[in-house]
Amino acid sequence: MTAYQEHPNLENICRQIDRLTTVEMRISDYSRGVIAKLHEAAVEAQGGLPLSLLAARHIMANAKEGRYFFVVTGAGNPRFLPAGETDGPPGAVALALAIHAATGAVPILLTDEPFVANVEATALAAGLGLRDISAIAEIPYSTAVLPLVPGDAAEATCSGYLDRFDPCLMISIEKIGPAANGVAHSASGKPVGDTHCRAEPLFEEGTRRGVATLGIGDNGNEIGYGKIVPAIHKHKPSGETLATRVETDVLVAANTSNWGGYGIIAAMAALMQKPELAHTAKAERRILEANVAFGAADGSTGRHIMAVDGMDEEVQYAVVTMLQHIVRNGLISGFKRRF
Image (cartoon, rainbow, N blue to C red; front, side, top):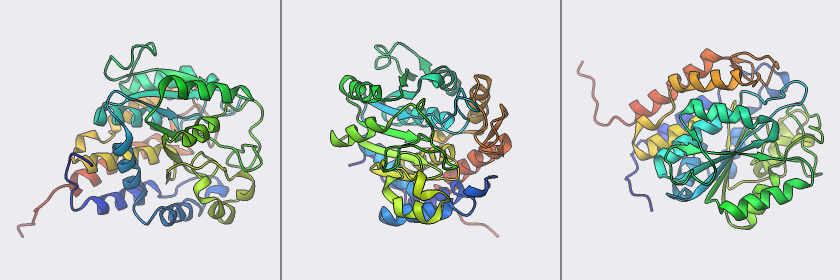
């Protein structure tokens, strides 16, 4: 039971959040005409409510003060994206910060070994201090970044993290999961290779242990999309190859995974009636600058530029600003124009 009264306009606010975060403006042919259909399938599979609202309620029901929660990210390519891409880490750190601010739960970030330094810099830019893992539960607004590993060692690594931290919640944002045959694929349908650091043991074993889970993605190959595999096969080019088997309790589909994260933050702000919780354009600029400065590249072009999935930095700031206004104006009650 929540300790706050939900606003009568909450569901409508979150429908507008979903509308904004699923506006398509990707540059790749294989992404065109897809996200709206995947979003529709995810809504239908999860009872018809806005996905941002489902995720916000799921977080608030499971994130507990003083308990650890995991936010997992990391998409890249050893040749083209050796430090990872600009979609994923910004959304991960912003979401980790917002959940901590809203609930007092303690964030731990997990990412591929080669991306750890990048995610650390991105977290600092968000306002999360980096501390030794033994201290983060005692120092507010702090975190630690732990590595994911490739190959068979991933099972032991992930099981060890679950044993050690006993998380109350796990979130995946822009983290690829394997298809039914055990092979993970990129958004273009190419196998990711043996260097891919695996997170699926964390979520599959966590689900068996009863840990609450949330998946955020934009193409159908990310952890969480196992919830709507038939829709990925139907609507996504190479969908029968790349569709992941890995499900989560709640799935959020968005035009970019970052936007999915920012939409959830906005829905949390609306749910709690605290518009100040929403992500800001100022924070987004700081986060994206740090992410690129420490080697992240645009996931569509492979260039080290201020862009996300082929969309310029100004687009990111505009989306964040519009999310703020959807929440702020949607929470106003009793306003009547005087003319």
